Image (cartoon, rainbow, N blue to C red):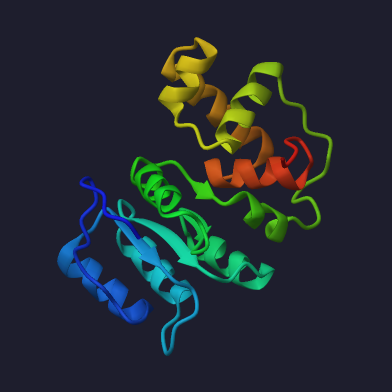
Length: 188
């Protein structure tokens, strides 16, 4: 991966347990986590990190795009999931986005995640909510969405909160996955 002046590597671990232990000592902003490792895998490490440090973001960076591995990462609390085959500039952009609180998932990962809808299709979103949902799926932050739609950032946050409540979801990542699974937002 090419260097970025804004990103510093502060440690390396061989498995999920070591990654967790390094987080205790180093308190990084973002952890790049592989999923398949000997002894303690990335799912274990991600879960331990997210349980203990809600402010540390975990971005899965792996070669595995099978449904079981993706589901395990999401269930463990990963803030994003990208593949090592990505261009290094895309990986750096993904790290920066996750550090700012934006969930990042490669488009091809959505193909892996798609399965039966998570709830019935009798939901109704307003046109504004649909616009915000599209921009969430494109990886935009609340401030970027507010700028694009000429709305106050608080209005964007309120709309997202309303969508989460309406759809019984927990976070932006679940919103994006929900949109793809239910064909609300079409993949390119």
